[in-house]
Length: 149
Image (tube, rainbow, N blue to C red):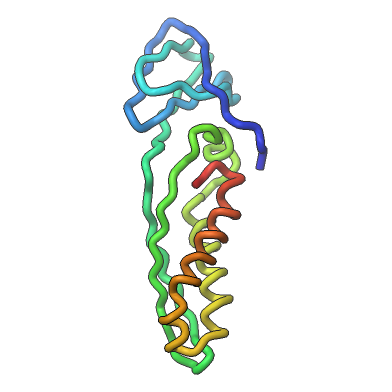
């Protein structure tokens, strides 16, 4: 994934686009990313430019991971992950990753399936804070390069 931060777009045009609060407008010119525009009215050239509204709101997904403990008890670990797009990396968030939710679920599943089998059932319940910290670290390292926080 690219490390270049997305920059605000300062162009002009003959048509208006209204970007809602809590969103940014991704500006493309002939299909190529040009930058983003803040909420409000912005101008663009139709047929040459396109402005796509992208939400910056916090989203939540739930992950359900089945695994076995060291003492052979089967668990279903339910995890809720909240994430959002970092406006300064909107280019990476839109163009560099096809399915961010699947990527987040995979990171959660990897941590849970690598941690729980080493613990007995009682230890798995008592170590949930450590497991949460490991999940957060794993999701951050997997998703930050793509503009998700």
